[in-house]
Length: 209
Length: 364
Image 1 (cartoon, rainbow over the protein chains, first blue to last red):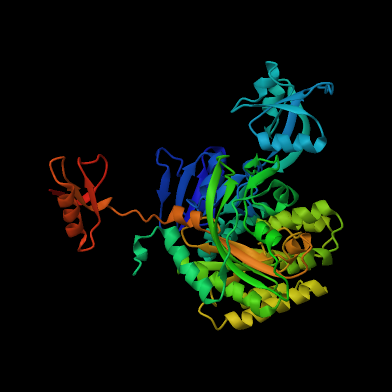
Image 2: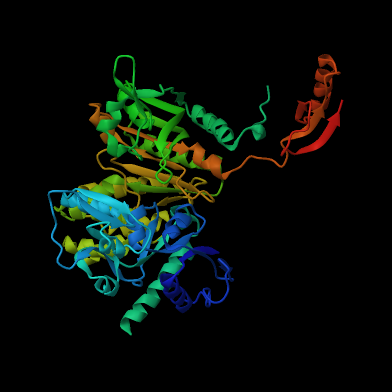
């Protein structure tokens, strides 16, 4: 049986409905129950925090998992990335005050959850920065003068606008990916390729409708 | 003396079996120093799996490093040539930083290296020894095989002059990432038919024979043709061995082309999430040290295996023998020997230790 790591939160709910459409019959695992492990005759699901999905898959606790491209690029886990699920679409972006001008005479202060992505982006641009690592509500960092800009995922840009900020630069597009443990891919090859084919069918079907 | 291998830890037990396999094939034990000059690693940084190295100064002020890798040291130090080749096996500790915890770990590795060989038989011997080594770890294993000549040939046939895109394509290959691969390949102007074949090649887990048939669709230059021919030659022999269905080609395995040039190996056993065996042909690495000859080898990560096979039994010892000050040492010794006679392990203590378990407690 396949073990799958599913992220909690909004992405997880979308992932659930795709898995149901693909015939895994997991129902509403985010319903009223507080259970974190769910199993039927098809599949065993583990509900974990989105950033932890790649860890569960890399260490083989889950054979496959659903993770955002943002977490994959930030943590660079040693896993296979088998499918773009096309859900949870957003962008990784640099955001700042609407009329922001960069003072190149001093390091740029950047607040973010994504330290590695931020570092490599600004290294490529040759801009010296000072990173301030936060865990949430990144927008407030600029509002309260903690940082000059932020690097974060932006879905509609509504939260940014409400806080007087705007996207200054897009870094890359983000969507959810199906990942797999490299060892499991050898020992559960047919189950994993079957899951990829079924999920691919659902995605293509959704695209055509 | 009869050695009871069941009493060894999984790591030691496997090494014991491996040593037999390798020495039976005529390989000799090679010992390395714990240290190398730091510059060796600095110049070959991209060969190493982790870039952090424990370095310190010796008495003369030279910068020395605790070795993070075995193959580099052997490649640098070997005196072997095509006329005077060597087949070696080793068991060594290497020191690497764990990517997640950012802490140094001592990793126990065993493996073989053959230096001075480029013929088909020796390649085959290394592949079969890799399969035998995995069999010694666990009967339920898979040995993946790839070919750097094929990957390199394919990329040059694609004519991707943009190095950045070539790198991105390679990264997609190793992640079996077909969705982004299609996008980058289209950017590089690679024909759609070839992209489809390449996608099929990395996403399916087909048999050796079928995979080679798919790979034939990507032959266009000499490099790819030679690589496929070499794989066919290997298949022709291994199909009649007990490992026929356990050696499976996987072209998503990509190694650094400035070091590796031919066959690449990765081995997995069920229940261990990371590759436990890795290696390949590294003529290019030897060439970097000015040695113009063929070399191949693989390493088995004994620590990784040990972490997933616990040898811990239910009891800390079979019998706990409790004695006190009033007993004569001679009597205690005699009692211990008596109790050990039927093969039980005996721990002699004056008090019952906390948190330990014994089958039986005996008082003097």
